[in-house]
Length: 263
Image 1: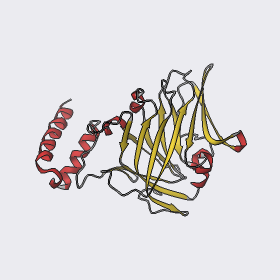
Image 2: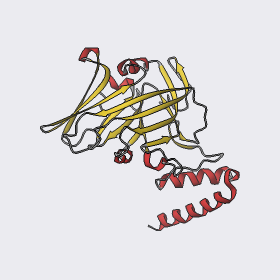
Image 3: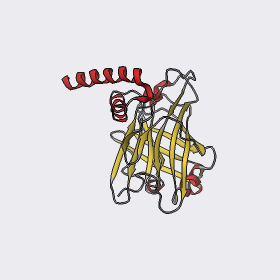
Image 4: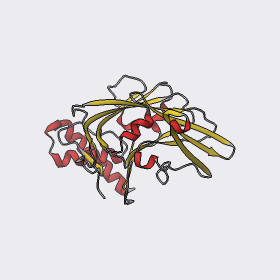
């Protein structure tokens, strides 16, 4: 408790300092302030040194990187028979081939199966089927620009660096979805694993008046080993979209995206 109070006092002092100095705040203090903000579930400030490394190349930054491309991932929970949030995996082509074994966590006592592509008559999507007792739910992941199974197949030798995710709800009234887990999970072919949890709601800008939309400015390296895991709330039967903005794209066996190929 004393440590938490000390941290909050330090946070308050640094915020006061930032109000006075703005982008002229020294890099060390700005980075330290950002880390305290993130630790307390708040969005980072937008200043000159405000890149916070979260692990294996994942960074938070002001959203001014000059995006080169953009695509849209759609997530649809088709039913809510299971009264729990359910995880879906986005990207991670290497893990798709094993049904995301050891990277997805089904509810206690439940199971998850993954299917997608022409061989299972789901040519445009990947379907996650969760079973808990007699209750069954399915969650679909699609891509607007390309049939999603084909998108995953292309990732076998394509890597990119996300610079922003625009998280938007089809039904702005279902704001509880923003409180669900969004996590970067990375597991190399040698078994090394890392994960970075993203507090979506903390990125809501008080000046942003668009209901049901939150921008998440983060550098996230994506290769065939990397994935986003999003929990889908039991009440969310309307789709939501993750609009992914790409800063760098590499179509080759290896990439110089920071952290993408740490063993």
